[in-house]
Length: 602
Ligand code: OXD
Ligand code: MN
Image (cartoon, helix red, strand yellow):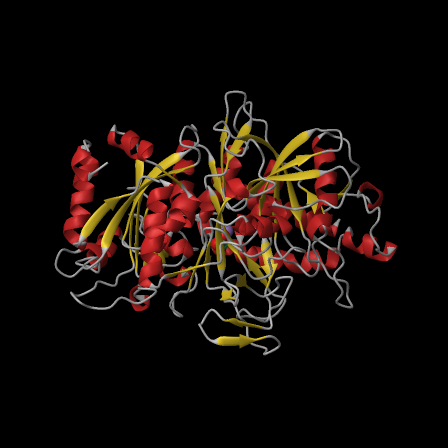
């Protein structure tokens, strides 16, 4: 398809406006074909952006190394440009849409003016979710980055069918991305063009638009992921009565062959991908993957909440991924068709990152320097990534692309908590579950600002991803619970990271988390035992299958105990956290906090 074949006046005018402003040398419409992927990738190899890996190690795969200043999402440069500031709320940066458009789009002085000079503008029509799913949504991303094209082709469904549907009037999210680095005639390009001093990752919730400038990395540039599937989609979900969440989706099969689907929200880098692809240590249990990062969920006509994974690939954090922590992610990478960003390269044309099973004696680090084992220097950037197609994951569930989605039985929330929070806790009600989600937190580590041990709240693991006022988002969750005839999932709070007072980990985690999933599975069937405590329903020690684990009785008790004094100390922190939301904080959550305090003091 070519631009001249487009029929829809809105699409034509939108595209023309951006071509006129950005003045690319060329415009290419992406069709999602392997042929086109190979062509763009080969162009990137020629330009030095991609390095082709050894086909015997990683077939049809490439490595890219970014600018040192462009290595992660930049939350400080991420804006919600709603008409009213209060609609962005206290957890987002806000700028008035007219002001942001002046900075970015002004025909004389906007940053986008002439920004694609010397480059190609790619038009990427994509679907978030299976093209035919009633839960899916469409978008078009304009970008001047071939790296973004290849990654979007792995992470989303790029198809001309999407463009044809949009051309016929189907709603779409308008996404524009530029690395912000125009080329003068004859000017040599760099391997990672970007404009790190002028980065803007901006969202216009009312008009369903995303404008991203200056960065080529991950969530800043692959606009289907965090920008669309979370920030814009949360607004769509609020307006249309569904849920767009930072959640993995897994399929759990019992030894008897019964199946349940679970969706789980953990803050970034807390092991969502590992849990989604876990190999259970409990005999006979099976975990399969539907998604590892984002879930879109709608009620069907029977009141059942059904979830799809809007993405088509995994954009996983590489360091720490190994045959021990996540063998299925390693196997997915080894199948190839992958892009690796900011990892180290071995002499035999493979990739290396910290935590991988075999450490090479030498390699080239992500900064292109010779690297030696035991040198004490990290070979891969801590936020280095693999981009791989989900379909080639050995444990991808057969129904992962079911357009109707999968029925969700339970939600899990959790953070990293060395103290106070038990292994698993079942909410007493939907409202109590929303309270647990709204108080999701991790303890600060030495790496972050602030006192070690102090809580960093990340409500619903959505702190950087909610596209509107988070107080209203809590209210939306509460409202979902009042839907007539809805079969609501049960809600759990889990913590794999609790330590004993002497500092040793109480829980092995990884595949042993299947023991917790088993308890949840049985609870959903009204089978497993629990005791009611002031903080929620906790498993008795007998109710968790500890068989084959080398754990002392004392540790088991501690893992499932209620630290009443610890909880009492947390209450003022929750109060302080809630204060941020002012009058937007739903009264129900204040009630939940008061009820917790009362139960703790009873
Ligand atoms: C991610 C994140 O990249 O949550 O998934 O930061
Ligand atoms: Mn994520």
